[in-house]
Length: 215
Image 1: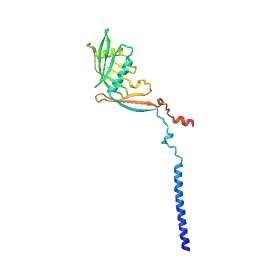
Image 2: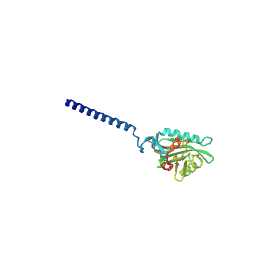
Image 3: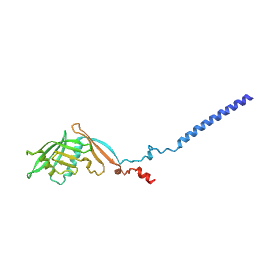
Image 4: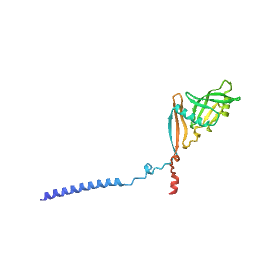
């Protein structure tokens, strides 16, 4: 009788121990589920956007760029008597007409593009001719500067025999900022940097200093 009672008490203790262990496991799981998440810097909902823009690299071909450049030139020359175009092959070839001595003569300029660190481009003159006239290169570029309509962000420098293309100063309706990353005409490898301001997308970066002052 005593042994039976002893076995009964042992099973009772084992039951309560097992029940208590299961209860602790359930409490631990519930606590992990409902425990408040710490406000860390990496918490996605609370992460603050502090930068002003994002930059992307866009690659294209000289054929695509050639079409875009000439479409821009055609728009620029609308309503004028001037005519010129650009061909991108192994170099940049500008062809057009210049008014010289009360007549128009054909213009042909071959230029080598040199990308600048700030994203602009210098078109360095390789060869230049104006019909059958024998004029100094600098003089021909002076005529180009005087008579060829150019965008405000393009500057002809006769003294240096080059054309400075300030791509970064282009005014784009979308407010995107454009710069040149890489140009290799022979390999048909062209890359541009496109910077997208967050304000253009209606996103206002949060200022940590202002937030702390407001609190």
